Each structure stands twice: as structure tokens, then as C-alpha cells.
Amino acid sequence: MIIVNTDYITGKELEMLGLVKGSTIQTKNIGRDITQGLKTLVGGELGAYTEMMNTARELATQRMEAEAAALGADAVVNVRYTTSAVMQGAAEVMAYGTAVKFK
Image 1 (cartoon, rainbow, N blue to C red):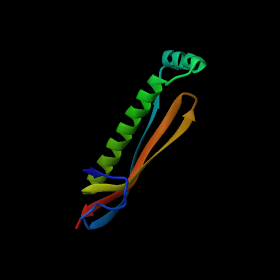
Image 2: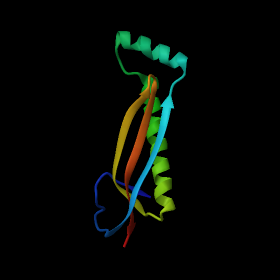
Image 3: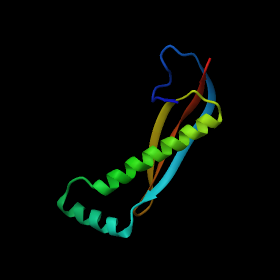
């Protein structure tokens, strides 16, 4: 499956199949929340949260790909990611784009 953030694939004529998306909500355990909270006092990267968000993006992308595959897509174009805090310490990541088939 080809995944791109442009609305075209060079050399390919595309048939649009529709919007596809995948999402996940991730959180860290209370121990990680406490240690990451202490890290904010001294500054620096919050490694546990960086790891959590990377995992969430991968999972959301996989779910978007699965939805596209179910439509018979060859690719997903114009892919975007969005995040939102759904509660303290929990974040939703959504991947979305347009499923397409090569003509």
C-alpha cells in the first residue's frame, strides 16, 4: 500500500474511493505520568510520551491502511494526522486520507 501526503502519485491516474481513517487513544500508566511530570521541572524531552505518540501514529496508520484495503485501494493520498487530548494524560491520534485505486 502506498501512503503519501500529496494529493497525487506521479505517473498514476487515480480513481477516488473515499475517506479512510484510523485512530487510537493512548495513555501512560500513573508511574510514567509521575516521572514525566518531574521531568518537566528540569526540562528536556519527555521520552515516554514521545514513544507513546510514535506508537499511536503507527497504530492509527495501520488502521487507516486496513480500512483502505477493505475498499480495494492501491494507495492512500493526502494523508494527514491530528491529535487531541481527550483527558489528562491521554491523547487521541487520528490518521486520515483518501483511498484511491490506480486506473
